[in-house]
Image 1 (cartoon, one colour):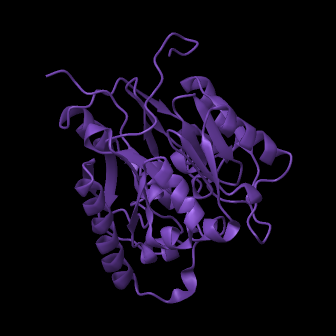
Image 2: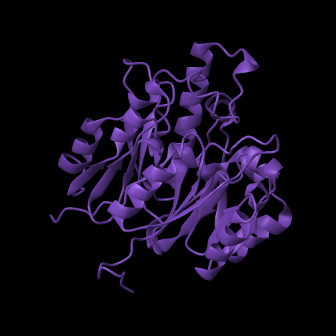
Length: 320
């Protein structure tokens, strides 16, 4: 298969991922207004939150490595303080033509997470080939945001960029991403049970090689039918999630692959616990195991889960 420009499609899944081990994790007050999944009222001390989050982070790394995924872990820096640094998928994405994209983020303290030294290390030290960097961060000056693969759920094979519009996901920035990377934008609106915009697309939608897990009830009409039709016409088996399951982070999952093309899905223990037997069976019939990781502190204070913590590295490898 070739795309319209003659290039080959990207793989949908990856065997190489980037993760950032937290140094100063805590509930981020600068993001709470737009992220209804955060719960900052628990009274957890900052030191306790950091200790718990570091343990949960290491648990996720261990699960991925046990499945044969190459995990490149970089340590967050103690200064400046970046409480959400363990969610790197919001500031960078990597693509198979050697492109890295840097994204505009709503919270000022989250913009401090962007680190060019990490891009340089992947290129210089870890054998990846970085050909170009597309910098979309100029959107911050205009109050327009697009928070990486939190805002974007990419069907890489079919060059489709699904995006739930919200204060963190701007239609103009989405169009610029689509133009520069030759994607078709699929914007839509979605609301939670209280009528607030769903802050990130990746808490309600995940697209794998052969499945799409989606909280269709959250998508407003007529967008709902349009999104479901697009998922089905690209030969994805649609696994519908309820709003309650979305709030348990069942939609914040990611398909990855280990050696010998052994594919699996990683998500939090809370997300797995919320699934019904028929939904688990749908994954099993596709040959996908569900790898559950306890992430209670990160989910409660950070308002994100397993998928948010993982940035796929789709960059080409350098020749020896």
